[in-house]
Image 1: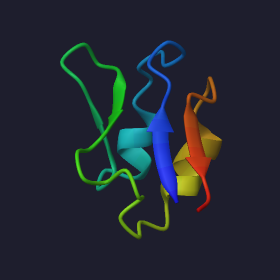
Image 2: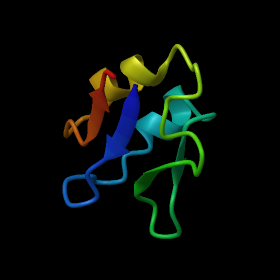
Image 3: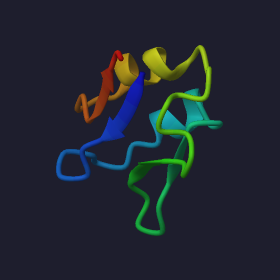
Length: 64
């Protein structure tokens, strides 16, 4: 699995960081980001739920 956030689409709602905090964080401007080293989803079961819950669909999950 490969997890990315499109920073051009993200509105900084924070839903990703609330749903899967082991994988997602918010940068200094409040926009979502994938934690360094967690681009593979880190085995976190809530990553897919975070992607579904993103209000602007900025999260992409690519299955290997």
